Structure formats: C-alpha cells, structure tokens
Amino acid sequence: MAKLLFQGHGSYRITSNDNVVLYFDPYAGEGYDRPADIILVTHQHGDHNQISLVTQKASCTIIQNMDAIIKGGYQSFDVKGFHIQAVPAYNKNHKASESVGYIITVDGIKIYGSGDTSTTKEMQDYAALQLDYALLPIDGIYNMDPVEATACAELIGAKHAIPIHMKPGELFDQKMAEKFTAKNRLIVKAGEEIEL
Image (tube, rainbow, N blue to C red):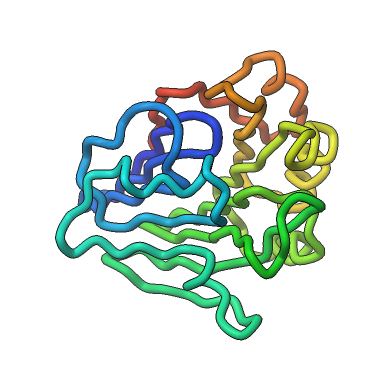
C-alpha cells in the first residue's frame, strides 16, 4: 500500500506500492534517507525548497514551481507511476505566478498537496475529482487560519483532510491541529507514517 510520512511543517514523503519515493517541499523533520525518485517544490521560500536535504537517485526528477507554471499554464507530469498536476496556490504572502499546489495520483489514490495558500477559486472544482486526501496549511500567519482551512476542506470534499504548516518554527502543534475542525479531519503528527 502507498504510504505518506508527514515529516513536519509543510514537508512529507509519499512512497508508492512499487517503492517509488516522492518528497514534497523538503525542509523539516527526519526521513530524508530514502533516495528520491521525485521531488516536488511548491515555491521558493526557504521552508519549502531544501532539495539538498534529500538523497537523490541518479534518475531523480525535480519539479519546482518554475517548471509547473509555463506562460501562465499549469503543467502536468507523468513520472514513474505518479501523475502530477500543478494547480493554483496563492494568498497575500504568495504570488500566484510563483506558487503552486499539486494534485498527485498514485496507486489509484488522489492527494491534493496545496502548498502555501489560502482559499483559491479553483478549489470549488476539486470536489468533482473525488480526492482521497487534502493537505492544507492552517498557520494563520503566512497562510489561511484553521477556520478558513476548515471551510476549504469542506469545499474540496476529500475523504480525509490533514492539517499541516500549523505554527512557524514547529514541526507540529496539537492545539493548532485541533482548531482545524473539518468533519473529514485526519491529524497526522510529525514523524508519523500512514497507509493511504
């Protein structure tokens, strides 16, 4: 079964049934020892783009925001059994032209990794995608707060909504996570790995 390791802050690792390893916004926590097949970066803030932390296979594919938006168009990628669709991400701290999220499909599981964002108009279209997981920031400083993130989770309608990026300088904060009150909430602590 595919697995997701929440490393903390906005960083996580997805491993497919075939042991293809994808890192999302490397920066925080542990678990960078498994050699990467794919690295995704949503934007160029230092707490999301620490590619050098990751051990990379010679064939590693790195997709960053500048690869994901070309002439205003959001790109899609097929890499080693992963389908990756870039989608908009933006708020007052993150320009739409410099930030993306990704919808990742692997082993029949659909995961929305929002990156740093607040509500986007495109989120209203995501319920039709029947997503399995949505990972949403809730810090309320650089991104939306738990109340807005809860509303986004309900709009998106994924089976499970995981709060991340919850407190600057912290990998995880239980009190903040509990302020995210979506009915499909799934709290995953930093360092915890779940089966998808």
